Length: 74
Image 1 (tube, rainbow, N blue to C red):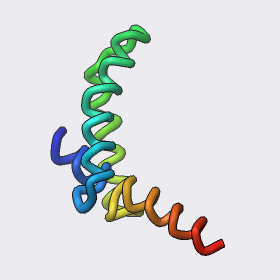
Image 2 (cartoon, rainbow, N blue to C red; image 1 turned 45 degrees about the vertical axis):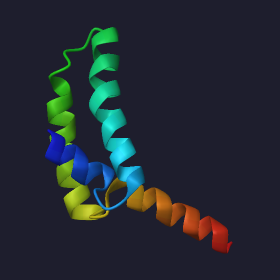
Image 3 (spheres, rainbow, N blue to C red; image 1 turned 135 degrees about the horizontal axis):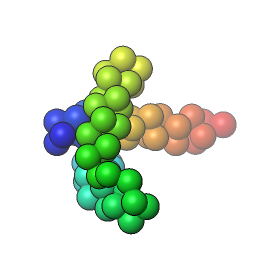
C-alpha cells in the first residue's frame, strides 16, 4: 500500500510525499466514520496506482505542479 501511495502521490517531490501521507491516514479514517469498510481503500489505492502508472507517471503532485505552471504562464 505504501508503494502504491508513493507512486500515486508522486515520489519525486515533497508535495507527493504530503499527498501520500494524507491519503494513507485520512482516507481509511473517513471510510470508518462513514460506515464503509476501511479495507476498501486497498482497492481504491490499487486502481489509483494503475491509473497513475498509465496516465500520470509523476503522480498527483506532478499534475498539480503542472497545473500551477500553466496558470502562471496565462
